[in-house]
Length: 249
Length: 272
Image 1: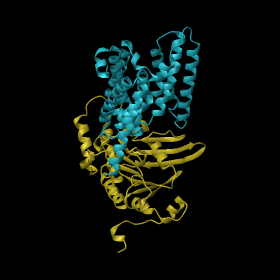
Image 2: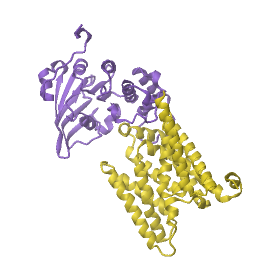
Image 3: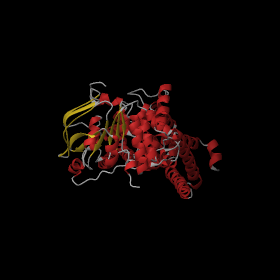
Image 4: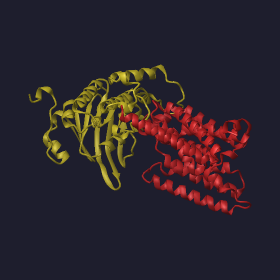
C-alpha cells in the first residue's frame, strides 16, 4: 500500500449565510479503506463531500485528492449522489446513463464511443448485477435498481475511490444489505467513502467511521460505541446488528 | 379554393409551410432541452426581451431581425452571467429582463423616426408575410442549431441529466449552459417569425412535452420535430380554411394535440 493518502483534509472550514457548516475538519483517507460517514441531518455530510470533490470551495483549509487539487484528482474518483435529486422521468435508459461515466475530459466530444468505453460500460453493468436492465428506461426501475445504475455510472469512470451519498435512502432493508455487500465486494479493488444513516450496517461493513457534526472525529469501526453515537446525535442511539446469527428466532 | 390546391399555386402559402417546417426542426431539438432542463420561463423571458432589440433596430435603422438576434443573445448571456454562482433569484431576474425588455422596446419603437411598424406582427407573428430573406435566416439558424447539438450531443445530454456529475468528468458545464441558452435564444428568434414573441413559448414546449415518453433524448427530439411539423401544418391548414390568424391557430392546434396525447398517456398509465 502506498504511503500517500487517497485524500487528505487539513483545517477545512466553510460558512454558509454566516453559519459555520464545517469547523476545522482534519482527516485522511488511506488507500483501500472502507469509510462510513455518519452524522445527524444538517451535520454537513454532503457539503464535506462536495468540498472533497472540488464542487464547493472551502473558506479555509486544504484538500488534496490523490496528492493533487480536487479539480484534477477528482477525475480518478467515482461519485454516486443522492438519488432523490434526479428527475427520473428523464428519457434515458440504464445503458446510456452508465455511458455518462465514460465521457472524456474536456472537448471535443463528437467522437464515437471507443471499444474500451463500451467495455467499461458492460463491465460496470455486470459488476452491479444490472446488465439485464440496460435497455430499460430509468423511470421503470425500483429504488434499489436506480441506485445500482448510479453506482454503475460511477464505476464506468474507472475510479480508484468511490464516494456515495446516502445510497440506501430509498431502499428496503434487504436491498440495503445487498447494496453494502456490493460495496464490500468493490472495496477489494477501490477505496470506499459512504455517507449513511444506517448505523448498524455501517459499523458492520466499514473499517473506519467518521462522525461528523460540523467537526469530524474518525474512529476504528470496532470502537464506535453507543456513547460515541449518542454524543454525535445528541440523544441515545441504539445500534441494530443485522447479522443473521444475532437475530431473534 | 382549398388549402391543398392553393398550396400548389400560391407562393405565400408555400413560404408559410416552408417556414413552419423549418421552425419545427429547431423547435423539436431545442424544445426538448427546454422541457428537460425546465427552463421554459427563461425561454419566455428571452422571447419577450427581444422586443428591445427590435426597438433599437428601428431607432438606428437596421434590420429588425438582426436586432432580435443581438438582443436574444445578449439576454442569454446576461441571464447566464447573473445566475452563474447564485441561482436562487433566477425567477426574479428573468421577470425583470422580460418586462424591462418589452418596455424598452415599446418606447423605442414609439419614438423611432418615420412610420411606426406594425407591432402586432412582432407580438403575434405573421407567417403569411414570410419572404425569401426570412426563410434563408431560418435555414441558417436551423443549420447552426443542428450542427452544434449533433457535435456536442453526449455532453449536452449528460449535463442536462446531472450537471454535477458531468462537471466531475471534466466537462465544462458552465460553458455548455451558456451555449444552450444562446441556442434557445436563436430558436426563439426563429420561431418569432412563425408565431410572434408572445406565442413562441407554446411551440417551444408543447411538441417536446408530447415526446416525453420516448426511450432516449435523441428519439424525444425526433418525435418532437414530427409533432411540431404535424401540428404546425394542421394549424396553417385550419387558419387558411377558417380565415383565422395563422400563428394563434397553430398554437391552438398544438395545444389540442398536446391535450389529446396527455389524456391518452394518463389513460394508459391508469389502465396498465
